[in-house]
Image 1 (spheres, rainbow, N blue to C red):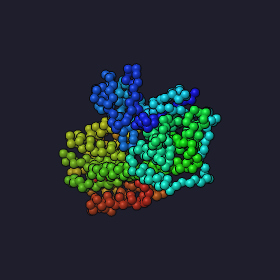
Image 2 (cartoon, helix red, strand yellow; image 1 turned 90 degrees about the vertical axis):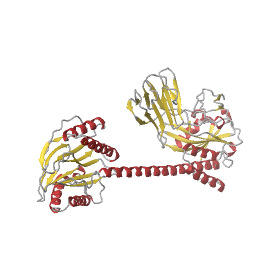
Image 3 (spheres, rainbow, N blue to C red; image 1 turned 180 degrees about the vertical axis):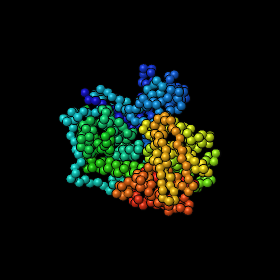
Image 4 (cartoon, helix red, strand yellow; image 1 turned 45 degrees about the vertical axis):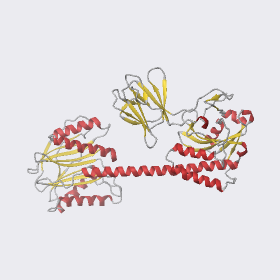
Length: 561
């Protein structure tokens, strides 16, 4: 017995949708809700889109929405029992097919819409108002003849057809919605000059067995009496194997309308699915010339679709670049420049390797007349690391404004990062509390490269401090160390973006060579503003890397009494 797939025709057109919520509310019955609109709110009250009468579900529990790229998301709306995706609690998350979303004790599965209403009928039984027959591959082998486009033959394609194809291509590039572009393709194929009786676009799942899915509303030629759409399984299988446009002529023994042939032309083929333009055409048109014409239409569609996707990506990339430029501008405004510290000079160098940096540098004048100097390096690069560094800036300023000392500041920073950083993420940092009048320093090293104390004679020494674990790994009891910054001496703090800098041959700068360069700069810049020393170091680092791309953020801080 042949398996039948019901495909909506224009006579009972159903607007397709992308995803379906399969809802198990604990009542013993499963509901299906199509995600048609942009936003779907689920909750216990009556004025939501989907009501679930379960006490574990909040009044307005969660929202499903679709972004500009057609991806579906779930957002928790402050529910009491939370929203979980595949067992993990989340506030907002992008969804994939098969994901299980739990709202309290209720379970929701995201599935593909299934337009098929399967039937065991093979005798022309009406399904959803139409007759649909699908032949198996085994049946087709005995009763169907196939025609594939010849790669050597030539076909007579009129200038009118070519003009219409170009017009369709231009129109496709102006359409924002994929369904609209698919509909335009099908409309062209049922026009008077292309003469297909029925046209539709089907998606054939590969990973899971299932019925073909309609991606657009099937189009029927004006004046055509077609009341049914035959999806021949043999044709689908042939396209899967050959990836060529293929015609199939059903035999009279199939019980179908013997005047109609079926044609399938692959549009897209990937790991997930095969997408076909599926046509039904009268036998008088079922020849190689018409097959070539239909395949040209499909090729024009694919080219227009590719061009549209590329333009869309270009627009998205442009928007991303604008956002990154704004993020960079915001971060650069947080870098201390021109900070006046009574009794001291301060200079800062800050150069992200990407748009934004994961390094954090700060200079804060404290209420007791001291100055707080911080250089930190967030594990990772780019935007995620920059978000952490920005949060550090906010927390440091808030905590110091509240009067916290260096030890409490470090404790609070670590506790905050332990709570919110992902696993195996951390922050290295040097925190120094310096009295400009006396040069007395209290400091903590949280897994960071040791600072150097330099003088104008070219002498240098490591700041003698006990090293502790980086911030954010676990609760640690940090302790203070002490030292003195003498008159005319310079405290140099930096990230490993300097010590691990590589030249064009891949040779690393190292902390030893960096220290030698810093000592030379301290000698050569004696009697000059500290900004001169910072400029000299930046020039040296740029010359060392040459044309080699920077692989890490570069940050340093000079403080001189």
